[in-house]
Image (tube, rainbow, N blue to C red; front, side, top):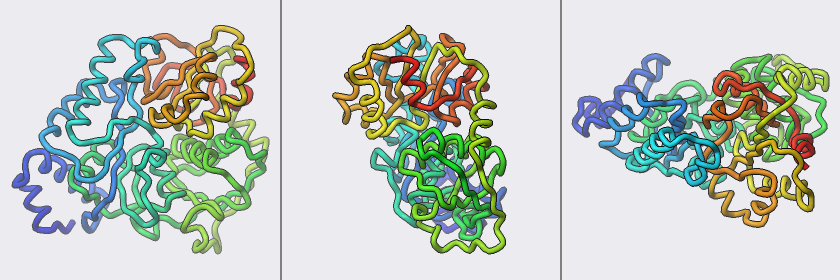
Length: 388
């Protein structure tokens, strides 16, 4: 891999230990994937934030890297708790202290610590053609597919190294030939958010790391983000095309590309396969984090009603969206907690909960392994009917 003189100097340690370690990591990645060079990036988004997922080893790594700073706008994925309401979430003191240490270290690196898996709602919204280094699977898929930016499915350390250096290896989805559709998907949908979550689950499970092209479907913003999340979790899809949405879709050559039809029976089968229990003790929405319009829709659904039962309910969102919706928060807080900075996947919910109900197929895919949960997969309408 070709390095410029500046890059060679950083690799030799002439710009400090932090940049040297970052360059060593990127050079190793570049050689693994036969990247010809490093290319400049305009932003980064980092995973590896929850103490639950990175532990003491992750803290040690961040302490080693804290001698330097990021050089491009850089945002963070959800942490393991709401930094202000962690006691209400049942988080233990030791976990909270270590989580706050992680956020402190990221802040020292110059990273924006408003933790969310939807950075494009918080100002980190790259434009078409921009090269970025994002590590959150649903966010990077959204960036490639809806915003038209270019990023690979970065790991947390790789994305941090790219943020420190302002560069990333040029391979994979940075190249035109790897962004072309590999399968055409048509589907029978009712059009709701939950249908698109199920569609993402089916496509991801069936086609793995494909580049799907969706024809004759019309997802809105919220449908796009939950579908991207489901495909990334079920099959590591990092880019997809939607007619009339994806900036590159109109120029795609579809000649000879396999075409498949997804029917309602496929969606229902996916829902039933993900479901392993029907008696949740936690109902959680917001994977990816709820947008402003979603919070408002949920508040409308619950306004004027009374909570029934004692099942705990979480509405997960970013603190920025939380602050924009004071009236909606008042409604939702009568039924559960509007929690920020975190989500049901990366929080230590296994300490207090056995079965989680959600409309997110991404969450349904991860909850059994990461959180030792049984799962109930249902639409947001059905979940709200369970509590009101």
